[in-house]
Image (cartoon, rainbow, N blue to C red; front, side, top):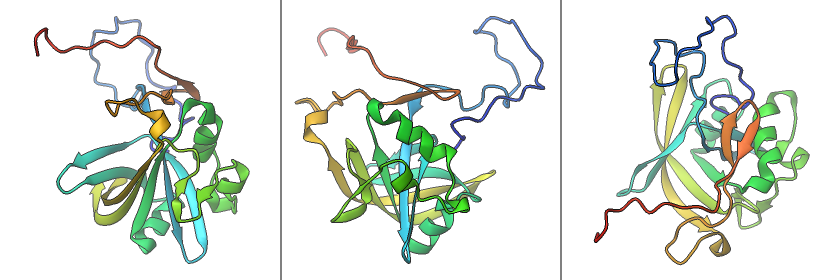
Length: 201
């Protein structure tokens, strides 16, 4: 995962009891700890497959449809993506939080087949798509952009798969997403939703 799901803040950083509204210049204490979905990035090449948890990912463009994932170059998934020129982006619901987190804790560098270990099966017709994902993108690599200690891998979305039961009539997610809070903790959204549009619009 980028950052790793269990990456702890720097314990050497000075403790502060300042109010939350006060900004500091420290980036290594809480950097990357904010609620967000964790994508499971899949890759396969020459008979080798892997899945990894990525906290840093984003849509980049609608036309053409581009999606980016930020990967550490040392990750086992990285050379698979570079060699295959393709990757998958998968979103699983909260009840698979254990598998999501395990994809970041375990490493294929030691020979672990994370698909088997975490019971993450793939679709026979699309081996980059995880069964049970409420949303999946199949991406063809178009750019690899160095960004500090990670590379932003930009993919042109070739295919979108989704579970229609996970979305409402407006196309909004109705299934409980797994939101990563940091420190191995996941949560999901409550039933309350606020429509922030001004009246009359």
